[in-house]
Amino acid sequence: MTRKVIYNKFKKEDITQLPLAQFSGRIIVIMSEGEAERAVNYLLTQPILGVDTETRPAFKRGEYHQVSLLQVSSKDVCFLFRLNMIGLTPAIRKLLECTEVPMIGLSWHDDLLALKKRGEFVPGHFIDLQNLVGQIGIEDLSLQKLYANIFRMKISKRQRLTNWDADVLSEKQKIYAATDAWACIQLYEEIMRLAATGNYRLVMNEESNNS
Image (cartoon, rainbow, N blue to C red):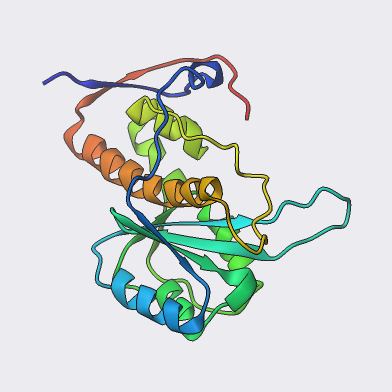
C-alpha cells in the first residue's frame, strides 16, 4: 500500500490549483426553538459530529458582533443554527454540553468563548484538531491548509467575510458553513488513521508559510 505523502507545512500557493471540496449532503437551517430541539435529538444519535461557528465581520474599530451561526454536521446532514435569531436555546445548550458524542472543531477554544457570550454552558466532549495534527508532524493549523495537505483538495474561504446576520443566508453561505463543519470530521478520522497506522511519509518544507 502506497504511503500518503504529507508535509509539515503546506505551501499556500499550491492550494489554488487544487480541486474544490465541499459538503454535498443535506443542509437544514434552524430558525426556531422547536426546530432546534428536533435537530439536536437527531444529532445526539450520531457517532461523531463536526462543529464550527460564523460571526458577522466587523470592519470598524470598536465594532463587535455576537456569534451568528453554529453549524453542526454529521457525515451527511448539517444543521445551521441561526443563533442571531434564536439564541442559545435549551436544546442547543444540551448539545454543547453533551459528553457522549465527540464533537470535532478547529481552533475551537475561540468558538467556545464566542458561544459563551450568548449564554453560559459547560462544554461537553469537544476535540480540537489543532491539538492532534502534531502527532503526525503537521505544523499548519488552518482548516484550508490542513485539508489541502491531507486530501489534496481546496476548501474555499470566499464567504468568510459575508454578512452572517443576513435575514436569509445565500446558498453559497450555507455550503461554506456546512463544509467547514463536515471537513472537521473528515480530517479527524484521517489524522487518527494515519497516527494509528503510520502509513504516511512526512516531507519537511521549511519555507515560511504565514497565514
